[in-house]
Image (cartoon, rainbow, N blue to C red; front, side, top):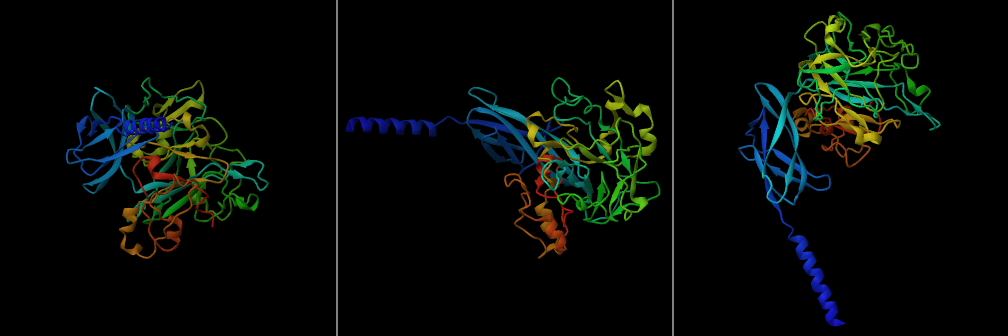
Length: 432
């Protein structure tokens, strides 16, 4: 019996030893831009197979070496650089494989895009539950536009659009055989149903580190009837035009008298329906700054691509160069069905949202840039606990809203990657 125990122990030790000595394969990942090596050092490249993750930092040649077990991995990198007074975001991912006798060098193609002064800070589109907790209320949507810089910005010509609309069960209308977007190489992005702009002659300026709230639906105090909702009856807010052509009474009730008429945003309806489609499950809003008159643009049939026999699939072809910022939201319930709506130069990645519970999609704080502002000393509030999921929270640890209330100036993350830049917040920031 004693001899048998010793043999079993020896076998177990051998098994552990074999497990520890599983072979590792060396692979090199090279950053590239436009098919050329990008010599950026001190950039973290991540390899992940969904269950394990490895990080390595690039040297002067812009590459990093990994020693990993055999398997198929996704290599990704995201960083920003400042050149000539502009801030550029670099994002990219690719598949790499560590196998016996396989290729050991892989390129990681990056897309470069320009960071913008104007960004989307928060989107509330999932609705909340009624007071009885028995049904969902969804007519209280809003979006917050933020000046993410230390310079006042003229937003008079800024417009709000929505990328191709679909529910989570629909197919991508512009998917190529290789999974790419057919309009990406053509230099445009589809906008659905309508585009919203500020009235002619109205000067819209946003001071540094300040915001404007736009009521997408229901510019009223929803909390009077639904305590879990939000108050959108604020004289400082902007909103839809009641005479826009969209006339669904639930989405566009008579607005609060406190909101001045020159805060109404205008539009031209080029799609079907009685309300602008700002979906609860898969919203993809984006900000644009046209270099032509937007009203003339949306009335010209040459600027549209129709993917249907009627106006339900009529999309405005927005030049990618007009896009200031974009956010890709997908419902958590159907995450496996996700498809991207934006060209990589404008956005990569997506943020999930569990709707019907009052949650919002909120932007993460750029910790380094925020802490670098001298006036913020002693004003920043840490230990942020406002995220729905602690595994997907603001990695800065800074409570942005509490810090703003304390007099701090916040710089938000802007990597043009919705997965990096946003998290799901427990409740709307405008709820006080």
